[in-house]
Image (tube, rainbow, N blue to C red; front, side, top):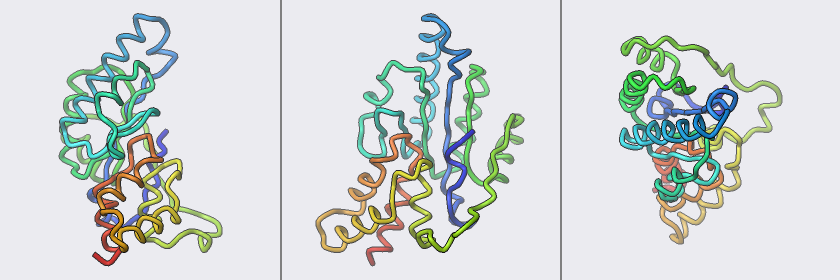
Length: 212
């Protein structure tokens, strides 16, 4: 299951927005002290691979790099919780999955992005997806939702911790010169501690919203 499967945008707009979720299973990977230590070591190794391959954000419950938290501090937490990460280049996803395939640690990995691109990567490197999560869109009183420019940003936080009002607040601060777009991007990433919030894409979009 993934909370990253409902990102809003056209195919063109989603071609630079990808994520990797690494999630150990408590029933298998945390049954005793030995398996727990092994899982923590494996998770850290997998996170290092994601970080060196262009993660623009990487996080856990204690924080994320996209809002400015130190990577070593984020990964220094001795927990089997796993980690979440965001990317702007599908080639990074390919390199990460290639390395994960070699490790073959048996830990759950979710790769998120345009389905044709993710499936193409898997086919190219010889991976067969185990499960597919496919978003069928939003149903109901969609007229109550924010406009599409706001939805592109709010849906980058799968738990919807980034509101349209928060976006408008920082856009106004960019306009009056009290904050830079890059600072605003980090502020918007703050509530999404999972680490799947794509900061560079958000910075580019709030610049446009602020008229820059």
